[in-house]
Length: 287
Image (cartoon, rainbow, N blue to C red; front, side):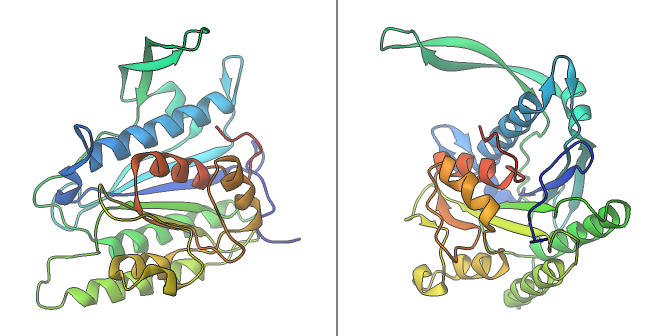
């Protein structure tokens, strides 16, 4: 059996982890009047709701995936927070709240009209001013979660982690900032050396920014043009398996033969596509 061949199912649920930077800089404007934190939370909430819709038949939501929302820096300093970990049906039945949003839809005559829609909220945006970026500790915590999952579900699909950040790892040590970067690379290597019957866990990373040129699914560091942040996230990200290349193609994302699952300077549209790509779980229906 080849790696990453198992699809999420009720019998063998996938494990999807959103690793969310909630540092102070995530309070900066990303698009329009939306902050990095606000837009990221909105995108994750929308993707989880799409997963609910895709996996619901009648009134029953099928538990084809277990989801963990992990924030780092969101409670200030070097905090790591397991915000919520549940099967998909629990997310469907118990959102934090329901938010009314306006969306544009076709009027059938070539125009667009505004309609009111309801969006369940599972993740609230956080970006306290004293929040740091303890990425290494966050990845170490994720490894603990995954090892616990594998002990119970050894035959399930390889877990997937989507790491969303706007900055370099930083734990507050101004004298030795490189230590946190080195620790992040080590933590990621340790995570990606965890063994499952479907292959090592997949770590996909996206750096969001309101400025800068996008670097999408690079194959080598030479494409990163000396961008230190991009080089670090490239190092810690997994190579894109063939099953996920299908999802990328459906989302009009250009993934090459040896691409890693990483994007630098992602704009809002690309961020949404990337989260959908990472949360596809090898399933056929990508929305």
